[in-house]
Amino acid sequence: MFREVTMEEISDGRTYELNDMVKCDTGDCKNCHKCCTGMGSSVIIDPFDVWRLKNELKLGFEELLQKGYIELNMVDGLILPNLRMNEKNACSFLDDNGRCSIHKARPGICRIFPLGRVYDDKGFKYFVQKGQCFKEKSLVKIKVKKWIDTDGLSKNQEYVLKWHDFIRAVGEKMIKLRDSGRGEMLNDIAMYVLNEFFVKDFEIDDKNITDENNYRKGDDCDITDIYYIISNRIEVAYENILKV
Image (tube, rainbow, N blue to C red; front, side, top):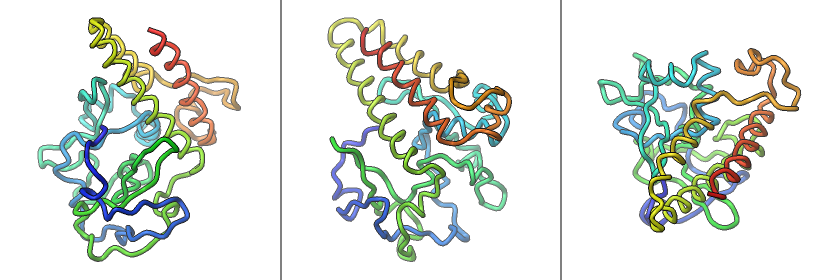
């Protein structure tokens, strides 16, 4: 998940913020779905991505696995879901016309492509991934926040950073446990993260959500409530994992 490369290797060396103009608009990817093929297990999805897929497809997490839409792999010691490639080595959500069948619910990593994120102590910024988009030479400029196309963008940015920091902290904790001879706990931690953030549905809390069925469908739920609920679970997980 954490790439040990320099910005010069993967970008033009520049970084961008939400209100910056950047050359990344693919023009609706007309006649192209190259980036949706041959990705292996690299399109890792986070809890919000999974929640969005559940709502769009009206499926539970185990059903997403059973139907072959997603799969589980070890990533930095954790068991995390990723989009699954089909027998044609293409994303399982790509339709017969080479278009994304879940476009409005597509994961964050797909939503920002060909942009990527680079993190530092202050947060994160975006960069253009060079050599990754087949239409690289025909990209046009667009404002970053318009290209990301995500509801509740400010809350989304807070959530993305919180999830990133959590995964990094858990990874560092697992390294310390392994080095101290307590490696038998690593599997328990990996299973805890998998169950708490992906397998289990998010519980109804004191936000304005009273009907669990409506909440799970997302019909009557403000998107910021979802960020709030996931963030709360991250806080609880910090206490349960980092105190070990």
